[in-house]
Image 1 (cartoon, rainbow, N blue to C red):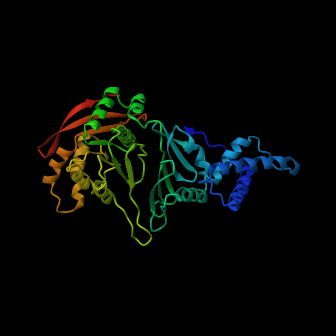
Image 2: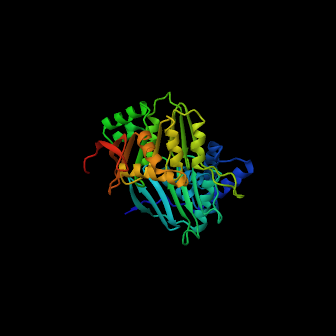
Image 3: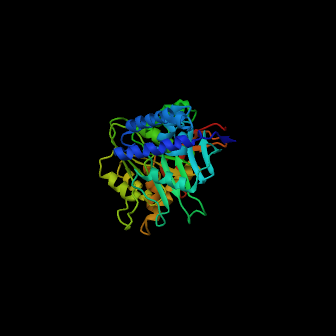
Length: 387
């Protein structure tokens, strides 16, 4: 099964787009800064084209409003992908090759009937990176960046990939941004949402675990949004994804090194800086490396936290949190880490995605504070019924 393609762009619309580009350039108008002016120019140029089309034997544009939207997508948006980006049901878009474009809806992926060109893919990526301050080239063949709407862009180029640019866009969706939204979507029952809200109010540290695309970041964002309004929150991410609005919040993301190899800001540095910002809760978008040590040290100072971890179960998430700090150096002792995890991580919420794409909370465990037989002891407080 394939998704319907975005509307075809005719030669007349392409010609109008070129005139709009020229006009905006001559006016020194940035369509990203002045979208209303860009829209007005696009509508005016489409109408002007039709006014002279019949007299000059040119192609007439039947749907002027649709053509104006296409022109804006080509000039100020992301061209052939703009319709997919604006579709609220599309969760993620990826390009394996110019003629192999896919999108995910409801957790299930389908191929899109859309054929780009090598140059077109590169132009799209460059346009997306324009406002991010990130770059991609032979010396930096990977890039992670946040688009203006909060969606996350990830790109890998040859010769890391075999031949084509690999592009992933994980969209920022506003439909599941609160615990109530997730209850309505069937991700958890109301009593679980109330339980999680209580943990947050009591200042308990929560880890969200799960496999890729299980809904970890979505749940973390909902948890952050559910924090008491008087709490000061500091979030730390590789690239901005949480996009949470709260009364007192500071969001920080990592920075890649410059062309000279300087200026890099790592997750470990950000976690340390977060502690200096008087947080009532530190939120780490994803713990995957030695920053686990800095997070544990922060939690052990009495500052509650929230984070996500890739794992196949809640218990495995705790094992991973106990192992990752060892990456920080040889002077880190497992005998210190295990008790630190047991005493500072209070709740683990495990997410899963079914083969049909449904995301839900599968299990919640609480730590007892004890280490038994070399493992953090837990008790299960919620387990979803078998699907």
